[in-house]
Image (cartoon, rainbow, N blue to C red; front, side, top):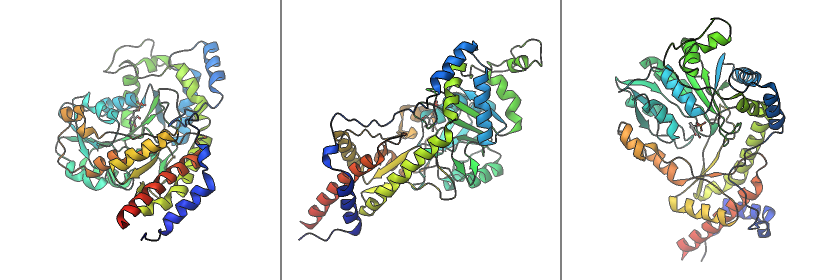
Length: 414
Ligand SMILES: Cc1ncc(COP(=O)(O)O)c(C=O)c1O
């Protein structure tokens, strides 16, 4: 005999009947995992930039973007960069990271978080993440610190804040620098403070997958006065060109190490069109995120699905909606079933400590990184771009979970 369905199960069934007639799943109507938004002002601004004739650095569009970012974040020196990767590399140069230094970071992140420091000869020290926020577990930092540790790199996953008070307190006590990898975080805050402005340095990404984008782009937030002057030199190929442009010196020359970390004016023209719509874009993402949450939360009682929990005292920006399944096999099954319905989903980072470069360059992890491993193996990102059909996607997932749940119930009662 079959057991009666739990309340959550009935709720799932109700939602499905109300929202998703199976005829909606046309094989031609593919819902992509991501669709970069165009706000409408990109073309006119690109035309203006061309007409104006300034194509490289220090044009009007770059100044406007920097001004908006400074207003949004309250950070007095925001530098635009060709990518977040470039901003992280600048941060490693500013932090004067040297061969043999150690830098603490999560393994559940993008390779750039580690590469920037490995390029300077440092060794990443990976710690595990928390299963609730999917961010570095601040309780594990202290035991990873050694006499060689120079910096901590909190990565705010999905635009959702790390426990920054604790991280800053530990860093202060051990005289370490904090470089926030806030690649996914524009518009998000920690206890009212914009992410990227709490550590000594912070970085944003404007890659086409991000909430605000310009194809490829990024920003470095300088929150510590010590780094302000040198950051301009490192950004400008190791020269004091900035002083020359602002009329402070009659010529410029090579004064320090540096590289080419300036985006073109065309990139900035595109970016300005996006930044001017930050509020609308963030609200749209948050409303999609909230709708997914509302639809899917009843299914979590089946044990088949888990949803990460952003901090309640902080604001995330709806950058990612991570659905976490009970096993890698379940995730694969769900991803295939979503794909069969024309809905593209995506897993995310492979743990850096298990990657070939991680094995080569990182200090071998003394800690058990089990939440990193489990999350990497079971997390699936749902489409959450501006205008994505969230009800259709959420209900498709509920349908799949409903079938899976029913199969398991039958199996356990046979
Ligand atoms: C956490 C994190 N850091 C850094 C990056 C690199 O950003 P970019 O592509 O702008 O260099 C990414 C890319 O998605 C990321 O997820």
